[in-house]
Image 1 (tube, helix red, strand yellow):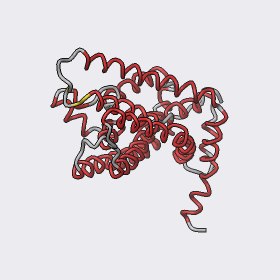
Image 2: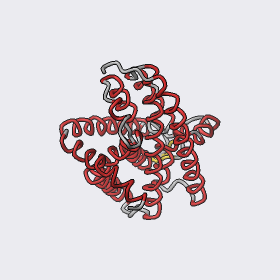
Image 3: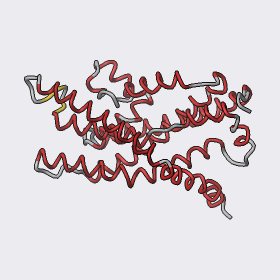
Image 4: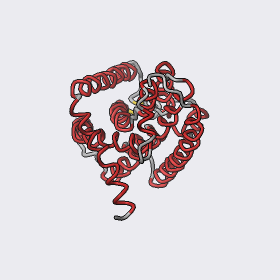
Length: 275
């Protein structure tokens, strides 16, 4: 058997488990999604009020249509790139189950990755496709034009996948901090708030002061939300798309390398609280 086939045969059960978990805990999935979509609608009405109180049809180069598309595609992108690796690692350290995972003949990171990919496969059918169709229906209703760009959408999908991988490794690195701090619940709230702002998920980076926006654009956080959303909206030229996606690949490689370094250091500090 080839190494590639052996690799996928090893981790395929984790993908299946991720799909089954999402289906098994349907109430949790539905409640989480409703809570997130409510947040998106709250932001929509906030920005609608901003535009209604303005004397101009545009704000920082965005129309209300642009802002609406940005909000909901940012929500969708954030949902699809969300990773709970930090929470999972922290919980396994607390209850002691991480000890059993560490003695299995498989990669610690790959187990989490393929399990989350199983979640994403289900989410694509249930959330991703309907959301994209809804956004495009809105754009058509407002402009009476088909604004969907297949090439931008293709780049958006690829960019979102890279963004998810960056998010996964970033959260795994953060999760490894549980080896040192034992519990990450409180700091996770701070981390998610900061990442939401720095990634452009809360407010477009274009709305920030030019100098700050320029700095944030080259940090890894912009790759999580702002870059994919701007690609979807057609705000970037082909050259800019390749440049920003190249930056995404760079940060992905950095995160993968850091995850190895942090893991090698973290396992030396393992002490089980619940085992």
